[in-house]
Structure formats: C-alpha cells, structure tokens
Length: 215
Image 1 (cartoon, rainbow, N blue to C red):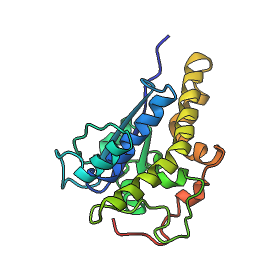
Image 2 (image 1 turned 30 degrees about the vertical axis):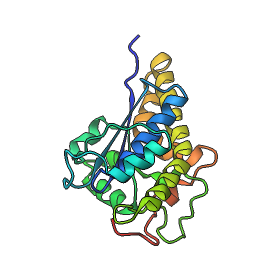
Image 3 (image 1 turned 60 degrees about the vertical axis):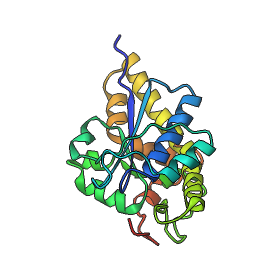
Image 4 (image 1 turned 90 degrees about the horizontal axis):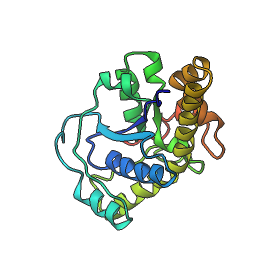
C-alpha cells in the first residue's frame, strides 16, 4: 500500500523574513513534538520578492533562538502554481489573505488560504488589528516577542486542524478511497476550522478586515 503524501503547509507574510519564518519554525517544532515528522511538510514564503534569497531578520532569529526554536531559512516569493501541491496556505494578516486568494487559480485553491490567528480561540477579531499578526519589522525586540506570542497561541488550533486532515487522508488510503480523500483535499481547512474544539469559527477567518493593519 502506498503511503499518503505529506500534508503541506506554507506560511505567508510580506517579505518572508519576519513573521512567516517565525511561524514556520514554531509550527515545525510543534508538529515534531506530537510525532508528525514525515507526515507534514512546513514551509514559508512572502507575497513579494523584496527579500528573496535572504535569511530571516536577525531579530526574528534572536527571538526564536531565545525560546528554543531552530531555523534555517532562505526567503522565497510565493507563486500561484504552488497552490497545486499545497494543502493549506496560512496568511499572517488580512492583507496577505486577500492577496493570496486573489492569486489562487481556482476557488478550491482560494479555500486553502486561512488566517493564522483564526486558529487562536482567544483572538479577538474586533480588537485593533483584528486577526492580524502585526508586522514587527519597523519595531524592536518587544514587537518580535509579541509576534511570537501570537504565533504560539494559534499553533495549537492549527496543529489540531492539520492532524485531523492527515488522519482523514490516511484513513481514506487504508480503507475507502474516494469520499474521505476528496473531502480532505477540497474542504479540510474550512471544516477543521469549524469543527475543532477551542478554535475560532470559519466566519471569523473569512471576515478579517476590522482594524486591519497595513501589510
């Protein structure tokens, strides 16, 4: 029996040197802690090419290192044809969410894009900035620490959603090919965000404009 392909998650921010590489490092570590090594692939990219080929911002590296996270990062520019092999695309703020959904070749691809903080049960969509993770680039260490706090708070809910998707795919491969696999490929991000305990509703993720920060 063929093993199912790894579940592929890509985090996306503006330049791929601050928020998205931090989210990549945190989520990869959390996935490894629960034994998902080899079953999930974690990556990151930026909506623009400004830092393509660069490493992560030194302040992001310092904060990650101080909290025990590893990283080995080279910035990349997100491309529309990546949707075909990605299962979930995680936007760090509402500007990225809209850009990525506009870039998506199909409605099914657009449905793969979700806001990271929609997976944080304590995130207040009505607060200043809504469900955005604010860009720390023009700030200092405290801003990067706040960014990390927000990423960590959402990672548990995201991990639940990804675990559900992986389990559904593996069950389909082992037992009844067809319906479960199709649901996982086409609907899992939306369904998991709605059904997992302690997670924000899907409607909050799809209406992130209140208090939006500049991308």
